[in-house]
Image (tube, rainbow, N blue to C red):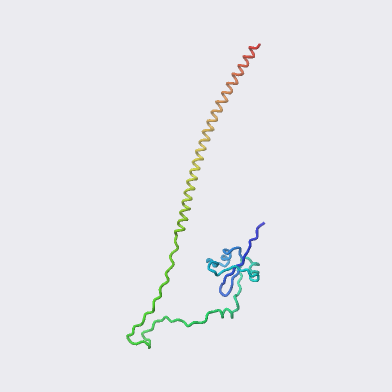
Length: 193
């Protein structure tokens, strides 16, 4: 009988909705949401224990259930207030407030964000080297074992041959002794009469 997997209900925000899914693990929940990122590690997904919120997902395991987060008015009220747009345009030479021959001030340059360094392959290369070393060691051990098996087979054939030769010699010796004993008994019987 197959064991029933224990399901948990997980939730993550998707736009104006919360997406719920009943799954056996966080990995399964991420797969159901179609996420490549670990939303749990980022703190944007969590486990739900409220019976009212877990009922529908548990009735439909593996299916993503979307629920609107608040009313439209509540969502609009949660938006930040409008801020005036920043202008980054430089004053033009035709600017009426500019004096003739006045230098147009340069805009401050923004420092470019330093790009993240490329991920190191060092750990991968070490793991690949360990695998290659393990494979080579196992290949050598297999070769040594095969050679020992061949040597044992040669030893077995040699012993079988010796045993056969020795057995034949012993059987001939037994036959000879048997014949001599039979002759001795015959002569003894004759001498008794």
